[in-house]
Image (cartoon, rainbow, N blue to C red; front, side, top):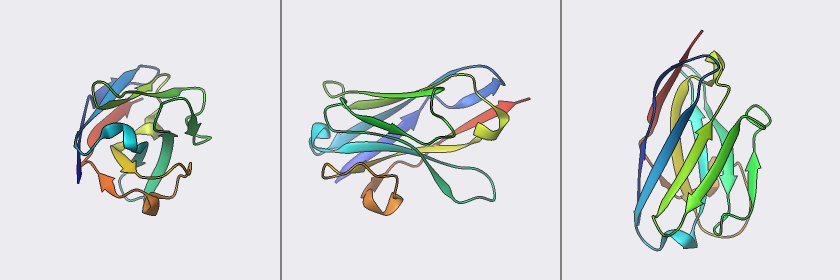
Length: 124
């Protein structure tokens, strides 16, 4: 089992920045690739980004490319999501997720472990 806890969400004005953190415990963190997903009110879960086990490879949804940066610190068992130039349409609950294997994917069904999420609200 891997337990994931997100933090860092909040209310920010459009154009502002936030950094989310996801702390992992349980099994060896560096054995898992990590993803960030988000879910806006009344909408389905949306893939945001993925980072591989070493942190050397990342993949972003087009909607956040160039504005969001994912990173990880395996010594601290933590993955981060730096979000810049935030827009009102970025408002959602953001969740981190862990998956085994090396495949880069935005398919949520590939991720076995999930955090409960942190709310991000961007005001216009």
